[in-house]
Length: 215
Image 1: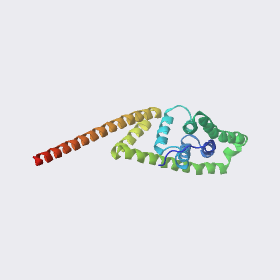
Image 2 (image 1 turned 180 degrees about the vertical axis):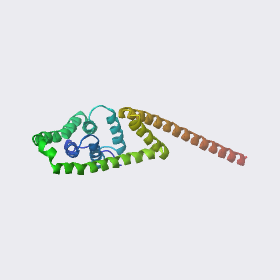
Image 3 (image 1 turned 30 degrees about the vertical axis):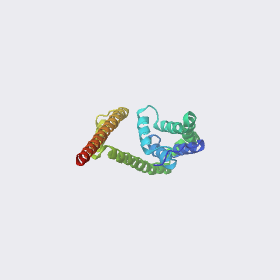
Image 4 (image 1 turned 120 degrees about the vertical axis):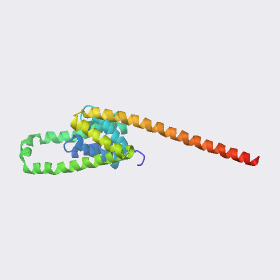
């Protein structure tokens, strides 16, 4: 991916406003929109960085959408950017909710609205599925096929069978990620050192052979 770009306040405001307006249902359903705006549309961060921030945000208390909006704004413009980003994300939906509050009874019983809700749910499911697949594919490439599948099964068991809190599961896997990266880096250094020693040994042997040939 290209180098990360820096957005203007206007770009941040418009991008976060779109996530607030189009992020029907909030929570996980809005994450693909954040990812599209920050990674694909504007190139503010790399996909790997977005995945790491999403994992950390899930481990922290509070709504995931406002945490992601705050980080994206902070990543671009510091504290003022975080404030602008969060306000741009929550104000449009807040204003719409207040404006529609007087018609809530009619909307809840309208067949048209129920049909719209039913049509939106599959779209959200597909967006989340695509994002999960892409992150899973990247995890398999980094860890290997069998290790990646093993971790998927372990995460499913911890979350669905043992009912461990998601934040605890995230912290466990983040801890393993740190251990994995450090171990992989250590192995890489050892391989490089061994390869260097072999090259030096071969060079000495070649030099000694040339010396004996001259003698």
